[in-house]
Amino acid sequence: NSKGYRRGTRDLFARKFRTHGTIPLSTYMKVYKVGDIVDIRGNGAVQKGMPHKVYHGKTGRVYNVTAHALGVIVNKRVRGRILPKRINIRVEHVKHSKCREDFLKRVKENERLLKEAKSAGKIVKLKRQPEPPKAAHIVNGAEK
Image 1 (cartoon, rainbow, N blue to C red):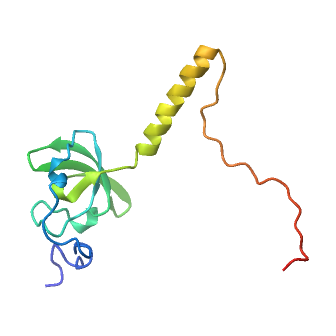
Image 2 (cartoon, one colour):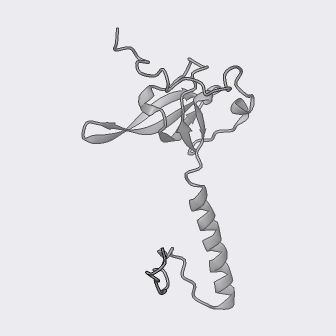
């Protein structure tokens, strides 16, 4: 029938060109802890513990860790509302998300600036400023 669990996933779960075959061991060596933010990406080579296509490409937070799988809380839009769903996925279908890297880098830099300013007895602005308008210049309309 046309209403199967994996319907419409021919390209979604297909392996990329020249990446078929054995999954690298580094996939299994990664350490996941409760509270980590992970990206969900179904791997077609492993059928066990595969997330539904709805969750493919979503980002969630780990709430449970088992030997081969993770429990992840993901937001899912159901009609007009967003529900936090708890799903269990094997580690082959997740990877650590980089969505917080820039934020954590900014926090670290702000703490460093604050410490320096405190020791110097100055006030420092830590807020991000929007890009200022471009400087004035003369436009030559004669050239083509």
